[in-house]
Figure 1 (cartoon, helix red, strand yellow):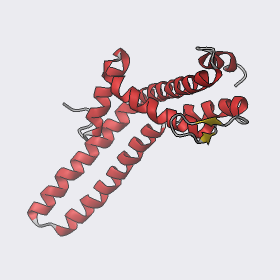
Figure 2 (cartoon, rainbow, N blue to C red; figure 1 turned 180 degrees about the vertical axis):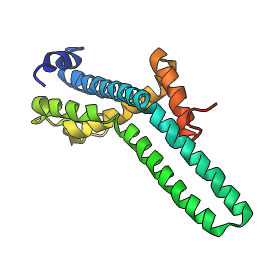
Figure 3 (cartoon, rainbow, N blue to C red; figure 1 turned 90 degrees about the horizontal axis):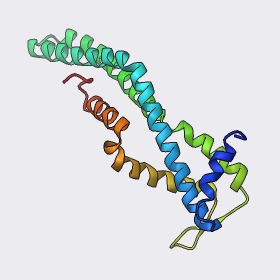
Figure 4 (cartoon, one colour; figure 1 turned 135 degrees about the vertical axis):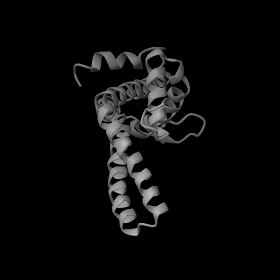
Length: 177
């Protein structure tokens, strides 16, 4: 964290007003964690794409075989295929869950750094008047940064292509067009 401190603190020295810099800096830090997390998702996805393709193909095959067994009235075959299909779906689900979780790791580093800088400070929440600490304010900023990034992601050159590929997987066709 000491290595990153000189770079991260720059986010908190933009306007010269301590309160404004805290709000702006925390939002920019949250946005940075979103960017790093999304980039991590893209790398993990690219590394695991072949594995995900195989899992998607297996799920689709089991769906087809299950439908065929059902249409033929083969209860035993249907149960066996359905059991294997459920297993394949579970593997695919947890792979996708892990992919989504890959976006959160930068938050822990950001919060660790913020703790060293802002643990003793409670600042007023704008427009509400309540005082909150760095953790709660970071979470609020992170939610805002994630929403903001979600709206601009499709316009950013690198993330535009990744977004299309990931959306294809979310729809369940495994990247097959």
